[in-house]
Length: 298
Image (cartoon, rainbow, N blue to C red; front, side):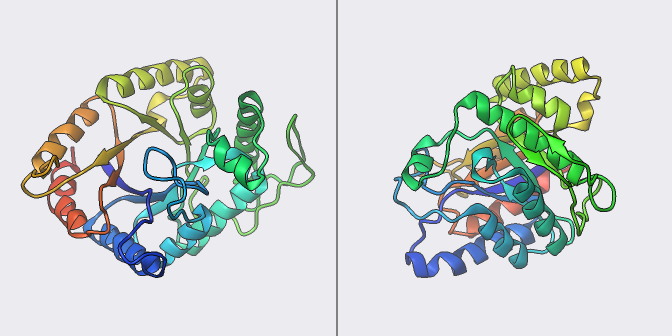
């Protein structure tokens, strides 16, 4: 089992001047205690499930480039990239650049996006859901071609949403056969079909029963397209509020271990999670010495 840290909030004591040093301490600690991956959201406003809309939010790819320079071993990525925010070649070039500059540690996380509020507020086009799914599929097709061979397929692409005359990617990614692609979301008709066709990992939400069901749906999509189900890494996004003694409504490390063990029994191979008040990095040290140490080989 693998573990990833998601950092969804930049509301730290000390305000804006302390965002950089606090985030550095967080990601360096996560890297050192053994997290396999580190993720930030691809949002421009804070989302309602985390905090108030006007709380600090960093742009994702820029933050990842900085995080890459602060870490040595963990893979890093967006959880997950909102497809309307960038053109397909920019997605691929950004992921390739991150991969090259980190020695092969990038993820390319993608999804159909949902936060129309931030797009409308900032003047970013946000087409209907059906169009976004078409954009997502064409972006995935373009990504596969740009990661092909030593410098991309260099072929033209003529889709409904996007057109290109030469899919060149130089330098090519260090990760081969490509920067691993994760698709976020559990939509059973479209999202999980795209996972089966194009992705290296699936990320879904919920408890053990729900995620197990989603992956059984994914298994059927894999059978339909003739792809081995086991080729796709199964990940889930969770939240943790931990303390050593479980006081104040928190969980103890043993309780987190039991909960994550149930997720593993349901099929999870890579558990990504945010940690409440993660700026208190002793919580990451505690999880490293307990959760990561005990469940890594499960």
